Amino acid sequence: MSFYDKVYEQVRKIPQGKVATYGQIAAMCGSPRASRAVGYALHFNPMPGIIPCHRIVNRFGGLAERFAFGGKEAQKALLEREGVVVTDYTVDLGKYLYGR
Image (cartoon, rainbow, N blue to C red; front, side, top):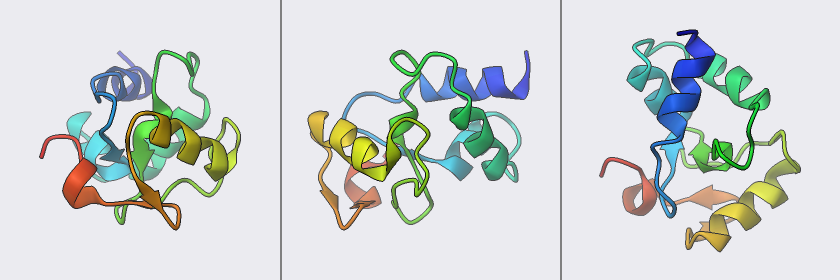
């Protein structure tokens, strides 16, 4: 299984209303220092409606500046549709982080 496949597998586990960080996904894939590679994988998401890449944020809860599927406004709308509160393009990780 390729690293990208591992990323997609882990991202699919994140439930609606939760987010994960790039670093968190990298660690879940067995490569804790590969957070940038997670970003690259998500940029080439082969199934945007099935692999919820909009649920991935940076380590501070910030939305992706260059969200591949419509920019950070699109990412914000997708998260809000799932009940995630986004303030100034940031998500409260204390409340919404997957695994907490």
